[in-house]
Image 1 (spheres, rainbow, N blue to C red):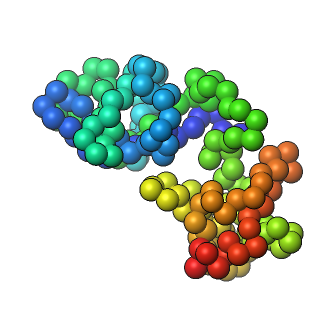
Image 2: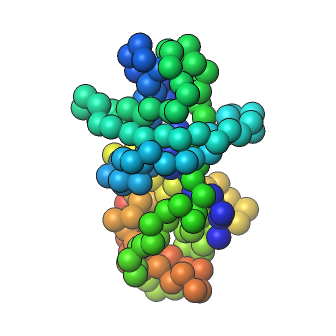
Image 3: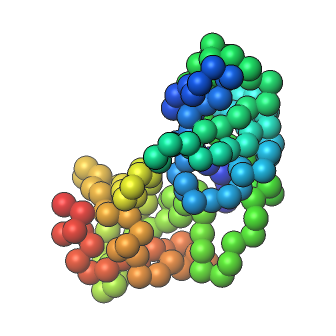
Length: 169
C-alpha cells in the first residue's frame, strides 16, 4: 500500500494572484476544501511541502491556492507538478470503498475467473479508463469502475463483468 496518494496535478495558472488550475482525480472529494499540507512533486522528482486549498472555478475548473505563491509567474513554475498527500492525512473510507492507488497492481479477472491481466494505471477524466497490462501482449483498456462487480482487497483481485473487455475495445 502506498504511503502517498496522488490527488491530481497542476495544469494551469488562474488570474493574477498566483492561483493555479488543478486537475483532481476525484473532483467531488472535499479533502482540499480546507487548507491541507501536501507534497508537490515536479516532473523531474523535486518535492516540496506546501499548504493547498481549493475552490470551484467556472465550469469544471478547480482553482487552488498554494501557500506562499503570490504571482502568476510563481504559479506557472508549478505547471506539471503532481499533488500528493500522505495517506495518514486522508479520511478513513467506508467499507467497500478504495483509493485508486490501492487497486493499481491488482489482478483483473472476469466473473468466470478468466484472468485478464493486471490493473497498471487509471486515467481519470469524465469517464475513468483502466489500463490492463497483459503478459506478453499489448495493454488494453476498460471503461473504468462501471465494469467492476467486486474488489477482493485481501486476495488482490478485481472482478469485472463478463462483457467488460468488449466494452473497452
